[in-house]
Image 1 (cartoon, rainbow, N blue to C red):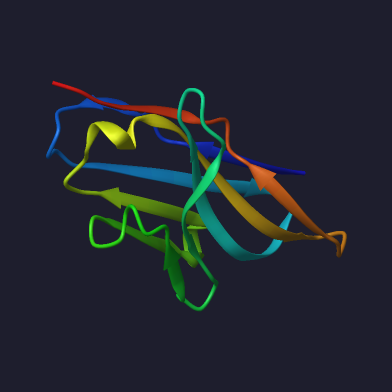
Image 2 (cartoon, rainbow, N blue to C red; image 1 turned 60 degrees about the horizontal axis):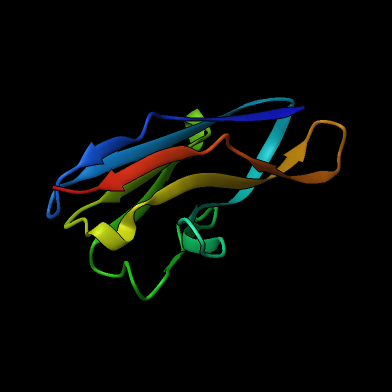
Length: 120
């Protein structure tokens, strides 16, 4: 019913920047909270940042001041601008959206995941 397609990740040097995007498509009536999660090798999946439909945001302490989440409701797209990247940011990044579909129910949908590697 709903597909989330993420942009490609990348290999980035420490201190570098990268912007991820995630576009939702399908039988969408409305999208509520959108967010980015990440999972590093050997670690649990963690919330990186989330944004409500009206633009309220929250961030993991480890990325505050470095990452910025934003969204374009007209395009059903969420972005994650990552600056001052550190090796500890290396992970597979997943986008997530709570979507009210045309059939009336609300579903949680995940992107396919994209690898971000921070290394010199």
